[in-house]
Structure formats: C-alpha cells, structure tokens
Length: 128
Image (cartoon, rainbow, N blue to C red; front, side, top):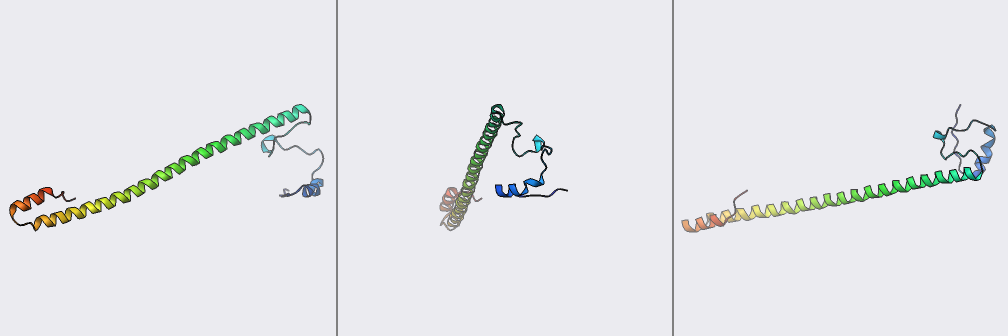
C-alpha cells in the first residue's frame, strides 16, 4: 500500500522517520529526485559537487535558450503589430485615393466643353 506524504519541515520528517525501516531498499537512481551518493568520503562529495555543477550548467543553458526564444517571440509579435498598423494605414490611403478619384471623375463630368472634359479625364486617376 502506498500513501502520499507531504513534508514541509524537518520536524515533520523526524516525525515520520520511524515509518521507514532501517536498511530499506534504496530508490533507483533514475527515480531519485537528487543525485545518490554512495558514501560520505571526499571522493563521494566531489562526485556530488560535479553532478550539482553539471545540473546547474544545464539549467543555465536552458534559461539562456528560453530567454533567446522569448526575445525572438517578442520581436515577432512587434513585427506582426507593426504590419497590422501598416495595413490600417494602407487601407486609409486607399480609401482617400478612391474618394479623390471619384471627386475627379465627378468634376470631369461637369466640365464645360469637350476639350475641358478630355483634359480633366486625362488628369483623373483611373477608378479602382
């Protein structure tokens, strides 16, 4: 039977210590939350320190990659927002051009005389 135990202090650990028999089977290294140390000699402690340094370097590398990916994502988002703002500006310019073309066409239609209408039509931008 397995029972989950959540410990939040060393005092709680001391209280449940008796539940675990002395000489109990060690946790397999692949399931251990921390590196296992076989002994307490200087070589064992040095091996633990190497393991801790390696884990720290791995974490630092992971943080650096995460920071780089975050920076690229922020840049992409800024470019996307700029493109959206540019599209809005282009729509406004296109609407203004259409309005100008419509006014020019209306003015060319109201021009007096054939030569004036031809000149106005030649200067008016083509309708979209």
